[in-house]
Image 1 (spheres, one colour):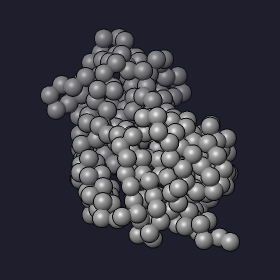
Image 2 (image 1 turned 180 degrees about the vertical axis):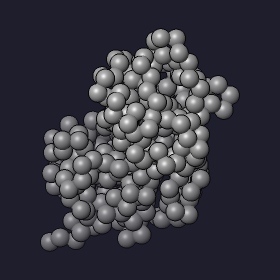
Image 3 (image 1 turned 135 degrees about the vertical axis):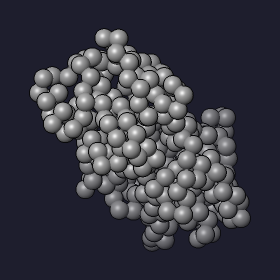
Length: 299
């Protein structure tokens, strides 16, 4: 019986395990080997780690966790979580199971990208979604934004002072005349025809449209939709927010006693949605671990 099982080994899970290990709380961390930034070559906007490859970040964290006798790491995913506070059972992908007093969900989310051929192959290298993480590296270069219009407006506001020429491309259907007027009013060029494919062109990206137009840009920015990487929120009947994320309080507590959540899959109701950030995910993992320790100390 562990004090806590941490499901997920990204920044949130790694920090949660570290905090629990430092407090000598028997902890099992499960690492499925799947990470939201798995295709990313370098992390940015992470103090003291700006430019560090995510794989190196994870390897360093795991090496440091190995120094804590109370932290066990298994390279296996979880399939199901059952039970209630004080007696949870986690069924692992290898058919085994583990039991714990509490559970921290840190499995993160996956990005479902717009249906544009070639986009998945460029994701994390020549295509991205977060201006805070990747915008500065493309300062002064032309970029292509793959719709929809409201998201493009937001991205133009963030990236306009960083990058060079911005061209916005609709996905699947053309922009309305009003949307075109708004985007052009923000200083962007607007393609009249939906994008049909993207591919690498040397150090650039070639963006093709239904009309036969081809635009070469330094990078493309696309807005995907988020989905939970694991089914545990549904399995446990956890309360979700309008964003689709798990609702938590300041210490990562979910609507089910004994279950905590941290990282991109959860946020407090005071926020409109999760913010993709290694630092914020790690901080959430620390808060969740402290929440676990508080619950274990309660009479």
